[in-house]
Length: 106
Image 1 (tube, rainbow, N blue to C red):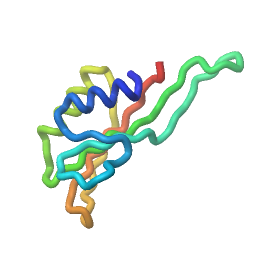
Image 2: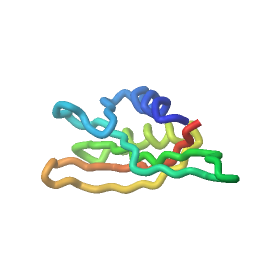
Image 3: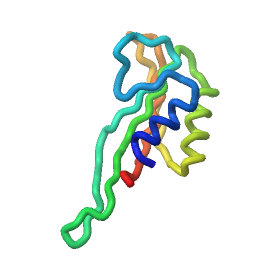
Image 4: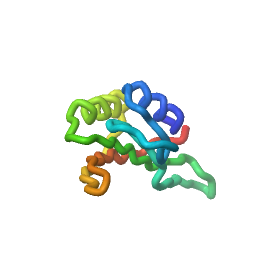
């Protein structure tokens, strides 16, 4: 899966989606995704594969198991494994649920 394909899959979930951040304030729930790192697999001084590490961040006012399940189901359908982290951002009054994934750049 490529980054544009991931964006398309996220938008199909029915929530507002932006890369990194929105240009204007959004009412939760909404999703931001961001490339956080990259890596390559090399052999014989050539890049064989490229990998991109992406964080998918779901912002909600309350714990939203339905929205989280939609993201998990989309990741499962695309055979993407993830790491999960949750944080309450007190100043904003929102939960941030982060799904960290790795995608191939092919």
